[in-house]
Image (cartoon, rainbow, N blue to C red; front, side, top):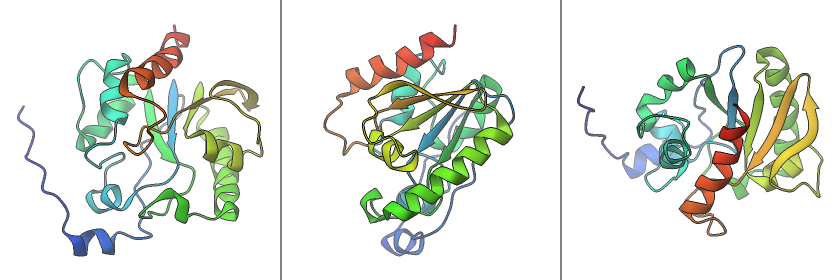
Length: 185
């Protein structure tokens, strides 16, 4: 099957994407529910999670062994049969995560807890230590498996895969994502 050549959103489409949302990729009983901070404008404009070229989520997911091939953001629905899903702490799209207020992130954390309780994934993987610390009131949290449970769901914090996160190079992202993948065995 040949993938369609994606078209890049225009500047007007990007500006129009502000405050839009992207539907969750979610189902009951997933192995891992990956949770971004919030959609960027590019992602909201195309309607697919982690859609911006340069975002390292999809290559990292593949290299860490979650998928057998590199998926395009438009193929995000293929995650569900594999036992994986995607949501966000805050649903609304912004140009940058730093446009979100602390109050929004805390409120998003409450919504996320309810979602996790309802769908009961084995793991919630929050992609961004700062977002996790704020949303869950854990200012000293470190990346990795957390002591906190949401119902029966274990919480794992991973680095934000955005290309803007210079603290983690691709090989480092793969290593920490693989730690989560290995824990599923």
